[in-house]
Image (cartoon, rainbow, N blue to C red; front, side):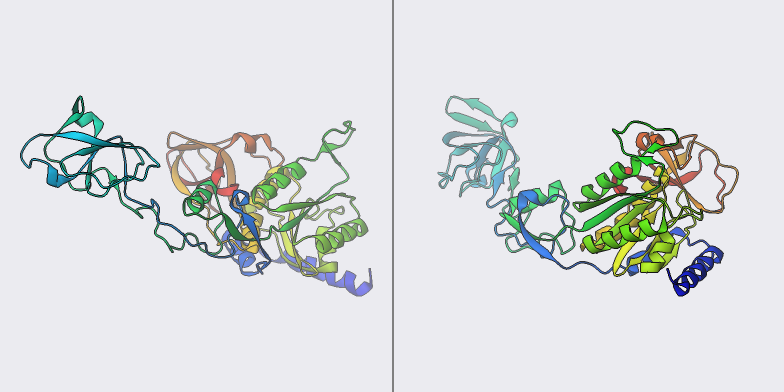
Length: 417
C-alpha cells in the first residue's frame, strides 16, 4: 500500500471515529437512496416463481370465476318459478357437478347443483340443501328466496385483462395461485442477484471440523446463506478470510468480480485485526460506519469498485439484526422489488427497563397474549435466544420502560420472509 493510500485510509477512519452515530432510520434512508437496481430479466415457469420479483405486469387472460357458479351444494332455480308468499314444490330436471357445462334450466324445475358448478341459464338463485325437503324427484323450496343468493358472479375475483401485480412485486405462494387462476403459465422476473458471502476471523472453524483450542464454529455463514437464499438470491461463497489486510483485499476484489453485492462478517470494529474498513477504502469507498443501534453498532457500508458491500458485525446476534434491518431491504430493492416497510405493532411490555440507553435497542423476545417479554441475556454473541424468539422489541433512544407500557414489536415474519 502506498503512503498516499495509507494517509487516505487513516484520515477516513479518523473522520468516521469522530462523527456522531447514525440513527437507524437515517441510516436506512441513506442506504436505500444509494441503491442502483439491477435490470437483467428472464422468463420462467410459474412454478419456479416463489420469492422472485416481477419484471413486467401480468394480465389475466380469463375472468375468475369464468362463469357464475354456486357457492354451496343445493338447488338452482328461477325466482319466476316460485310462489311469492309461501313454499314451492318443483321437480328436479338436471344434476350439475363442478366442471359440467349445463344447458338452460327448464322453467318450473330446479337443478341439483354442487359447489363450484356453473349456474345454468334460466336460474338466478341457489337454495342450500339444508333448507329444502326432498321427496323422490321433487323438492320443496322455502319462501323468501333472494335474487342471486349463493351465486358467485363471473369475474368476482379477477376480470379478463386486469393487471394482476405491479412490477417489483415479490411473489409469495398465494400470488402464484392468483396467477395460475388467471391462466398465467410463464412470468417475467428479474434475474436473481448473486451475493458474495465471506467471513473474517482466524478464530473461526466450520461445522464438522474437529474443535480446536481458542476456536469457535462459524454460525454466521450458515445463517446468512439461508437468509439470502430465502430471498430467492444466489450465494457466492468466498469462504473464510485470514485476519490480514492483504488477504482481506484479495478476497474483496474476488467477491466484487463475481457478485452483485458483498456481505462480510467480522472485521468492522476498531481492533488491530479488523481490516474490512481499510480494505474497502483501498479498493473503493467506505460510505457509512457506526450506527446508533444495539446490538450492531459497527455496521459498515460502501463499495468495492462498483460493487456494494455490507460489513456486518461478527457477533451472530448483531449480524442477524443488521442483516434484517439494513441488508435485507437493500437487497430487495437492488433486486427490483418495491420497498416495503416491515410492519410493527404495539404490545404491552412484560418487563421493565429503568436505565435509558443512548442507542436504539432491538431486544430478542417473545410475543404472547398481548405482551412482549425479552430474554434476560441480550448478549450480541448469543444466537440461541434469537432462535427461540419470535420477534424484536424496539426500545427507542433514552426510553425508560415500566411493566404495562406500550412498546413496538416487529415479528420475525416481517423480517425474514
